[in-house]
Structures are given as structure tokens and as C-alpha cells.
Length: 115
Image 1 (cartoon, rainbow, N blue to C red):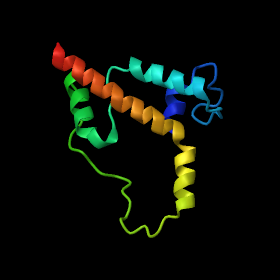
Image 2 (tube, rainbow, N blue to C red):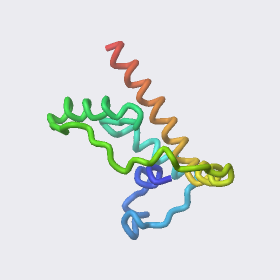
Image 3 (tube, helix red, strand yellow):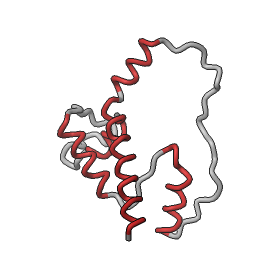
């Protein structure tokens, strides 16, 4: 739930920087969603190029060519269903925030197409 943490932390809650321990609950997630809506530029990994293009257009940045880092081997072997379930559980709020971001991007895109 890293992105929920980063978008949901407030200065009052952040006692140890990014290492601050938090309790992930519905109000925390709702604060993260509200803060996501306030961002001028939002992107998702599967459309990273569009996100970078928007940053360059809005802010005049030259981000250069895309680079791929921290890529995984396709030969990871079998991943147990138990481990997959744990990852899903541990990141459930980030998954919800991601779905919210996808919907937000669609709404913004529809809004810009109208205007």
C-alpha cells in the first residue's frame, strides 16, 4: 500500500518520514484518493508514455528516452497461490487506489474531449 501511504500521509502523521508506520483504514484511503484528485498530472504504469508526454507538455520538461530498470526475469518459476494471495491482501488499498486512478484518468480524458 505504498501509494496509499504516500498520498494519505499528512504532516501531522509523518513522524518518521516515509518510514512512518500507519494504520491503513478507509479514512486513510479516502484521503489518498482526495489528494490524488488534486494532482495536476496523474498516470498509470501501463500508459507511462502518455504520462511522460503530459509532463513534458505541461511543464516543458525533456524527460528523454524511456529506460527500463528493475525488470524481472520471465523465468521466476512457480509462484504459490498462497504467496499471490498475501501480495493481494497486503496491497489491497493500493489496488483500490489504482482503480480509482484509472477512473479518474478516464473522466479527465472524457472531460477534455468535450471541451
